[in-house]
Image (cartoon, rainbow, N blue to C red; front, side, top):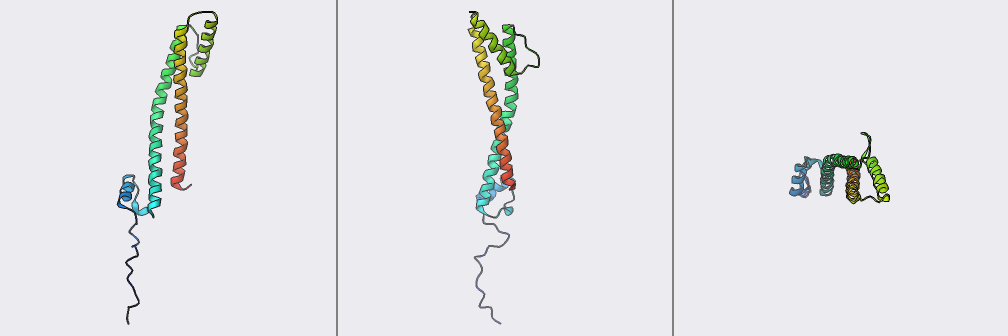
Length: 158
């Protein structure tokens, strides 16, 4: 019996060998992914970019979370100190926005009486600016968390 009809099958890839570049395999290993679980170069690149975005978002979230807490307490402290300087009574449970609103009302009433309170007004404006920046950072934090959740869904195929 002759086997002349069988041609070379060298153009077939063995089942256990992937068609990923060495660079892609290295990146996958660095990210903790087994290259044999990925079927194509395009899929590998998509996974790599999704994981890198997720890591970037998590780093932003962590930085914002730690900085935001300390900054907000510092702003609250500045607002309370200004209230003491102006003789404004505030409750111990008053939030920063509530204190800012009271200080604004007091400064406006002092201005109508003709008192020179430019220093206090400038200090209040600085507190308002810092408070608004902190709130914007917190909103960015929540946005980053949403992005991270969406990337997790993408990676998991949900």
